[in-house]
Amino acid sequence: MNERPRPCPAVYPAAEEALRDCDPEAKCERVLELVRAWWAGELEESDASTPGRMEVPGRPRQPVLVHPRDLPRRGLHTTAGRVALVHAVAHIEFNAINLALDAVYRFRDMPAPFVSDWLQVAAEEARHFRLLRARLLELGADYGELPAHNGLWEASLATDHDVMVRMALVPRVLEARGLDVTPGMIQRLEAAGDRDTVALLEIIQREEVAHVAIGTRWFRELARARGLDPEPVFLALLAEYMPGRVRPPFAHAARRAAGFTESEMVELETQATARPAPRPKAS
Image (cartoon, rainbow, N blue to C red; front, side, top):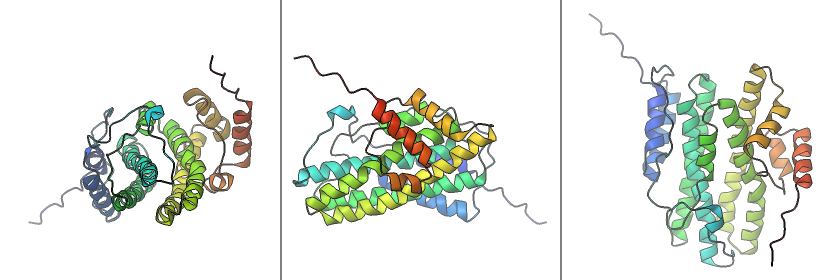
């Protein structure tokens, strides 16, 4: 008698295992295996479990998490300054792995192409993290040795109730912010003569455009499926969840390549210009 074929394991528990793994290197390996298994057809979408709220994802005990204003600010003319910058970007990429995995784990009514997209993003973020960690080691440091902030994961908690809101605000606001600031970092590093770090940031910038574009595409598809006009919905969500968070300068070419329309860019510029200047401190 032929043995009945065993059902494929579900992708969601596998994504959760990778998401909860606290060791950065082990997490990266889990992500690569997860992507391989998904594309090999060894995982399926069906799963009866319900995703729980994850207040704290898998992360190492270090770095210590602090408020952004308490992070060290150093010039890039010193090794310590370049270490601080590379460490900050590495932490962003580590968080981005968790965010991509959480999109797969959490939003289970999305179709298989959504899973494919965000698993691919997770794999690319893992590669970015590894590149940056290797650069830290070349500079005599390692990931976890400096403090970092938790803004990206806090945004995931604020958007874990609605996949459309997540797609609008995490890729199109927080990750798009990276598109804006990376060119300036590259210029400063070039002036400091650190071509090795520049080469890594150029790779990351190119691939992050595609990540923001994935978020843009899914946000618009979700908005239209609900009978909504994506552009005013995006601006309304921005005003509701992240007022004052989007500031110039904007990398217009990179944002347009990532799917921002000209009218969206005009509105972002207008809002930034209209924002009142901060009040001077009392003497």
